[in-house]
Structure formats: structure tokens, C-alpha cells
Image (cartoon, rainbow, N blue to C red):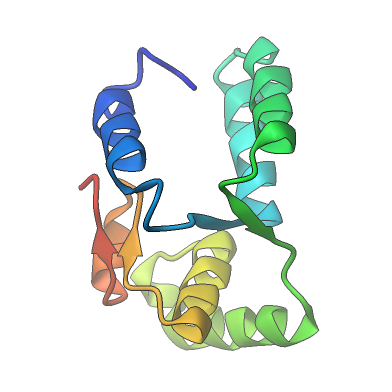
Length: 121
């Protein structure tokens, strides 16, 4: 998506290597967070490209968190607010726990702190 990102090549290589064996999972909240970040970094033109890419993708499973997942994320952030996790992080952690996912294609050190394996960190 953003070829100037220092982790672009590593993330792209991982996706190419694993595309036949693993279906990446994300949430609509991550999509929103990414769009917000692109606008904040003065790259609004990338928002359209990003959303168009997601709309065309059959490889990525996008989950819209239901009430149960949101309640779990709220409970987690209440218990672990001092860890510095964002609410979106907690949604991801709860979804990953629910689905038995251990690896995250992220550089975010919070994933390691929460017991997951951040593949780009």
C-alpha cells in the first residue's frame, strides 16, 4: 500500500509467502483506524486506494465486531488500561483469542506484551 513504509517489503513478502496457507483477518475498526492515520499523515489520496483494495480483496477476512466481542474488548481495556493498549488493540486481541490466532502482521509491541507474536516487530 505505502511503498515508502519501512516494513512494506517485509509485510508484502510475508503475504506472498503465506497467501495460499493463511487467510489474514482484520476488523472494520482497523480499517477505520488506518483511514484516520492516512488522513492525519496528510495522505488522504491513499484512503481511496486502500478502501478500493479492500473491496477487491477476496483474501482478507474483515470482521465487524459484534456486541459480544465489543463487551470482551471493553472488559479487557478496563483490566489492562495501564498497559497502554488502545481500544482497537483490545478488539484485535479478543478476536485473535476467540479464533486461536497467535501471529499478527504488525509492528505494534503491544501485541507481544499481550502474548501474541508481532511478525514485523
